[in-house]
Amino acid sequence: MAGKSMEPSEGVEAPREGAAPVPRVRLRHFSRSLPMLLLRARESVMKHFRNSLRMYDLTEQQWRILRALMTVKEIEVTELARATFLLGPSLSRILRDLEARQLIERHPDENDLRRARITISAAGLDLIEKVSPHSEEIYGEITRAFGAERMREMQKLLEDLEAVMADIQLPLPGGEAGPGDDGQD
Image 1 (cartoon, one colour):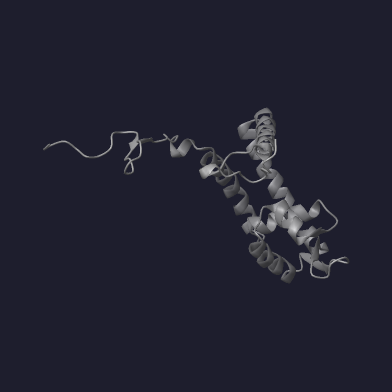
Image 2: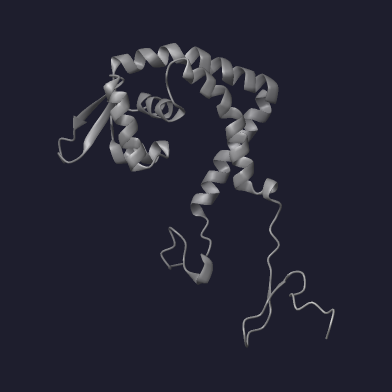
């Protein structure tokens, strides 16, 4: 039949030989996907902090590590990776740089000499004292522009989302269980 298209109709994938047509899932617009909204919001915030950190020759990852180290007396490297959402190889390189600048100290773990424990040094604490006023000024500007109540509400909503996502178990393609799914109800 001339003039007729052999393309599958809108919203239906071409069937495999002997298989029924598979309906296509309509994805939400890319700009409205939750991961993209979160990334764009993060980037719009971080660009202001990055400018401030550059004045002190710090990257956002280095700052994240120093801030995390302020909250503990010492921490094992694997725990620090989890706390800062940094991959092991990146964290190793960053720790080496921070140690070379004498902003952190590395000590062998008393119970397992293959592991290291990290602490912030006096120089690291001094640097945080210098950077903190700039950081708090940025937070103040964001809070003034966005509104203190909306800021508290957003922080609470993000904490709630993180908690819900930790408990949610979504199936992987092919029916496989996702992370944290032990197969038991």
